[in-house]
Amino acid sequence: MRAFIIDGYKKPLHEADVAEPTVGPNDVLISVAAAGINGLDERIRTGEFKAFLPYRPPLTLGHDVAGTVIRVGSQVRSFTPGDEVFARPRDHRIGTFAERIAVDQADVARAPSSVSVLEAASLPLVALTAWQALVEKGGVTAGQKVLIHGGAGGVGTIAIQLAKHLGAEVATTASARNAEFVRSLGADVVIDYASQDFSEELSGYDFVLDSLGGENLTKSLRVLRAGGMAVGISGPPTPAFAEEIGLNPVLRIAMSALSRKVRRQAKKLGVTYEFLFMRADGEQLRAIAELVDAGAIRPIVGATYTFDEAPEALEAQHRGGIRGKSVLLGA
Image (cartoon, rainbow, N blue to C red; front, side, top):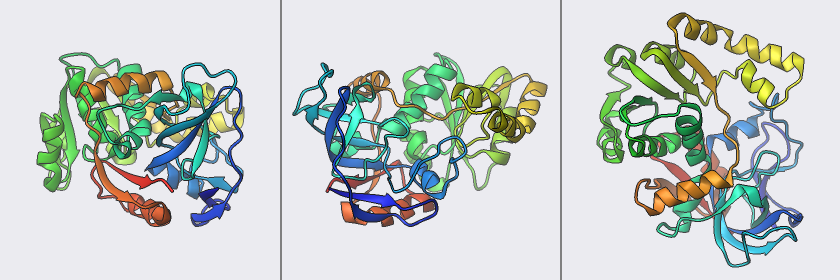
């Protein structure tokens, strides 16, 4: 079947003829109608995460899928051929830039019925990231103050809406041209990152979702109230994360060193920093689909590409500037 693969780290994405997926007893074989494009695809391609998420090439990229079930494994009871579904396949089983993909049933949910297949394909990774940050780690509740960086991006557009659904007061950073756009998603306070310093404008926040890392994360700690939490999705990874995914002692020490400065600063300020590397979760996707169909979350697709344009689509996503998500049409 047709797929877009890399032959090694830092190698270009290109089309290839690959073997059909093997469908295990717990797998759902999906005909790919559309695939979301994520920053994680480029980070995997360049090897940025190979220390804790190694892949052996050749590798088909792609972490989001929406499409139709065409076959199920012998132990699958929740899905049948013909079901319209969406998923973020688990790590080491990615590969949605292809005609078909086999996904563990635990990672799959029925797609929301109120949106297009393109919109459904834009959701899994970013919506799960927002859910796991705000609901699981942050425990965000009504009345809390939440800062979401990069409000016009893939994660940001969903996180703003989810935070508002949870009853939070939401601040976000965005460009001046996107100010009204992020307000339309529910942002109460918009900081123009080009002309304003959010750390001087904001204070007393309960939760920050940081997608940039570095100095942005350092400043984010300072806008939190005592006892507040910052969750970073760009790093640096923490010893707790290293332990959670079972890394060896050498890598645990390395990750401890990477995050020592920010963890020390957080402790000094009386706040918490946690690193989030989202995981596949079909149950959470079911909850997200319900929110989409209830009108609480609106998928944002800023760019679409034909299947043949996958390399150009990945490059455009890496350059940035796209509202919401980019989506690749199926072959």
